[in-house]
Length: 346
Image (cartoon, rainbow, N blue to C red; front, side, top):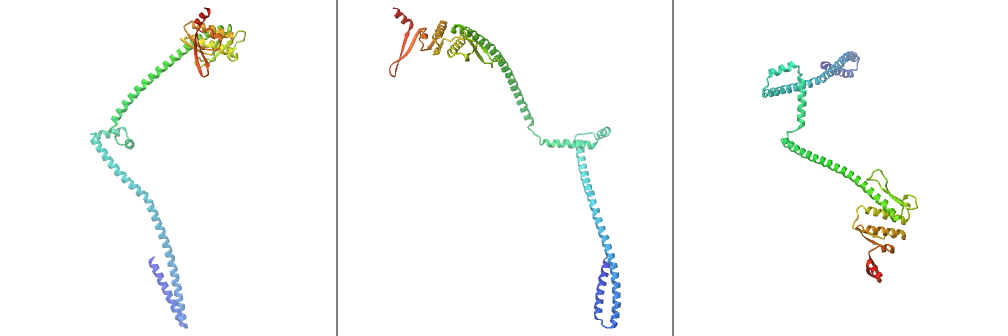
């Protein structure tokens, strides 16, 4: 290729030289020489074209060869990487084998017996290696050895024992409380039922005494005794049985007095204070009310009552009044009814 290039350059220079010579020839002889030179130039140009074709062909083949070389080199790169990887794995395997041998020697293992056992049982070494790698990863994931782990475990066990004991105590206490609640609930139901029955009985006997007849009773408004309400059903003489809301003001007051005294009879107190209870009552009902209070006062209860009703005052044994003869000056006047009656009779 280089030779063809040099020849091409030489031919080009020769052609240029001939053209210069043709320029200087002016006569007929020179023209003949010029024709000869032109023929020679044409011949050389044809030779030069042939050489250029050869040159272009060689250049194309050279480029193709260079591209093939690059492709071969690229295809060799994975093989080189694979060879390098295999060499590293071989070195790692040799190092690992040496370490395993050291461990076996340290453990005083019988290599011949171990090899015979492996070959006899058909153990796959690659499977064992995978299991070893997995175990090593698990060990690495556990981190550094905690030297205080045993102490912490002991403390945790003691703590668990303590908490278990507390939990047992709490469960026992819960059982005890639940038993107590059930017992209280049962006793409450029993006592409430008995109390309700007694109050209902006293109310049924107290109502006719105050009204001079009729009847009354208490009715629970629900099935559950602890949550049920109580409704007062009263039937004064000559009227239909109805709730207390349908009674007149005096009848409501007298029914309420009968209910209060019925409850009071469950556990009579030594003192009872009544504040103008007789205010809405007429004279007939006031007499019955006064008679009932007088009867109950002879059963161990002392009644203190405030009243403006003369009929109610007649049953009192002691009268204490407040007067104001002078503006802004209050005076208390006490009267012993028995002594006053004696003075009047005398």
